Image 1 (tube, helix red, strand yellow):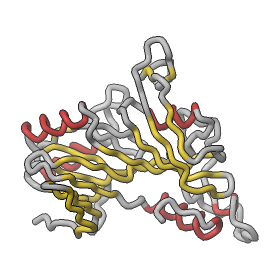
Image 2 (spheres, one colour; image 1 turned 90 degrees about the vertical axis):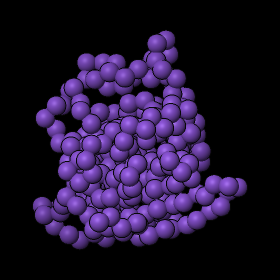
Image 3 (spheres, one colour; image 1 turned 180 degrees about the vertical axis):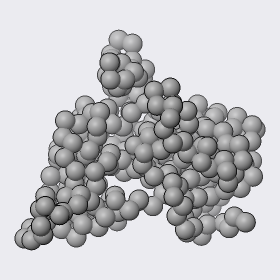
Image 4 (tube, one colour; image 1 turned 30 degrees about the vertical axis):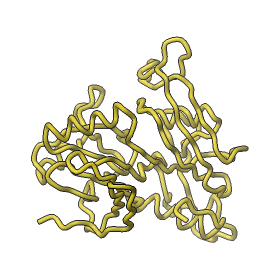
Length: 272
């Protein structure tokens, strides 16, 4: 039987309650459960798994199919990239699906992503509003197209410089494919290990930034060798009760290892 995750904080706002949850369940192979009831399931997925069918990669592992063994039929209400880890929200019935889809359509859902980018920004906060065209080139990448691109807005906050990198918090106001990745690349700060939008595919190794590192270069394993983008939190109105609920997805092991080492070396931590 599902146990309600530990409540982190309760904020009373008028007649509605704003509740924040974090996971305390043991990790499963491909995801952990942040929260579930009769109407919604909120999962923390690992990188490398699709959340729904993809016409370009039909054989790739799918989170919805994996989780349906536990929850029954799930209805996708939003998407995150296959290589992105973190929070994924599903509806568990048609009425919840309708209610949540309207929230996304009306842009009342609040999302926050954390990422590690190459380079150092000259700004503390930045809003990028370049119009985006999904599947805009031969590599199926999203491209900036001022003529026929869809309106797209992302707000960014620099959360700490760490040697060659910077932690960035991203708040997408629209939901275009690869939006955060393209907007950060346009701002001159491509995400670490991004195979599509960063020319630098070098993995993160401790020897790259730790002074007086004396390990064996031949045996050193990367701390991180995949897209450094994590869907950290999502805030919704519950489709039945309408209370505001915020769900936080703990970092996966590889990104957490990077966070701890960078915080130790440079005293910069996106979670502080």
